[in-house]
Image (cartoon, rainbow, N blue to C red; front, side):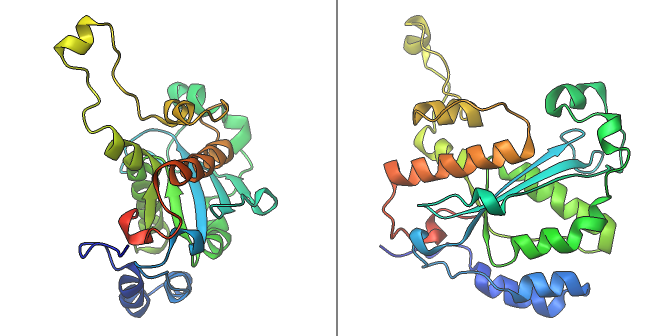
Length: 236
């Protein structure tokens, strides 16, 4: 099986970005390169990524914590996990605290994102990110880098939510389904995990959600994809 002709060529894009990036940390990140679109999934270095934020709009809200967890389809490297609480540029709201349970006292002495940027980009370098709902991680990290160094951040993503969406393109029940009491199909992280008989975890903790996402991708591939499936068929 080969990657579709429309698959994004992230390896070529990284080469271009390495040449155009101005910040040396971004240059190093892009120079680390990326696997080609035809690389089998079982050979791809993966990094589960989750961020918790003060809200849902990257232009108004900010990252408050990040969780990273390197893994392959066979193994999750919990010993290499990274977790940071960072001081956001925007204020915490009562609603956001209710979701992620990070309070004003937790962030009082936390570093700014710029202070952990070297570690963050080093951990991400050479990996394909795995997230559940790519719009959050991509938009918030891109906006954060624009604020910190004046340049955005681009990276390949396998979105486990999007993989579930492919399986359930018609998630709202029709009139007969509603008559029979059938509920809409949820592709939220916890509900998606239940379909693969994965255990329940507490939601909205960046590192726990990264672990939950890594396990979900392993289950999705084991159930739906061959190990030699080209990564280009799954990433965006």
